Image (cartoon, rainbow, N blue to C red; front, side):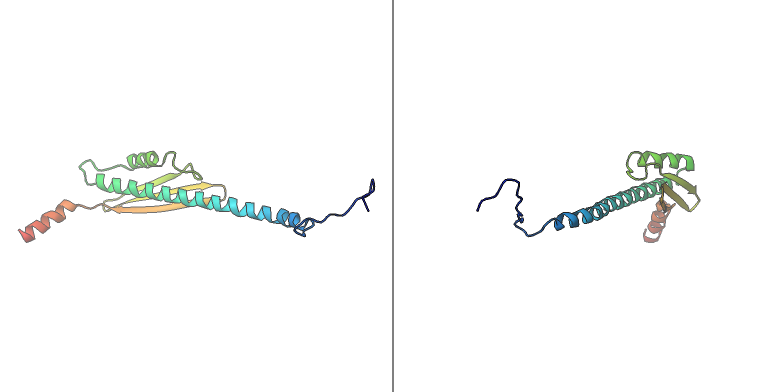
Length: 143
């Protein structure tokens, strides 16, 4: 017989799920969103760590090269070079700073940054070498 006016007929969906899929998806989506946001945050953290580390190393190497010159090198000039290298490259830690120590044998760059609960500290060193003296010693021995 036909359907009468006002009478509701139960219809099942073809998959056999009567709303349970919707409830399960509603419970899982916040977890999926949290995992997605956490992984993006982790990627930003490691990106900035690599940028800060490479800028600190470049600054230490530049300092070790300039330390061989007659005038030497000052920590303030190296700090300026560090800030020029890092400017605009960090996503998560935009305000990185460096503490630079200039010694006779070594240049040490300690870069640090923080944001809320996260902090980062990188130490890079470069030895002040004099390759000219080494080459001259080799030439004296072989020549």
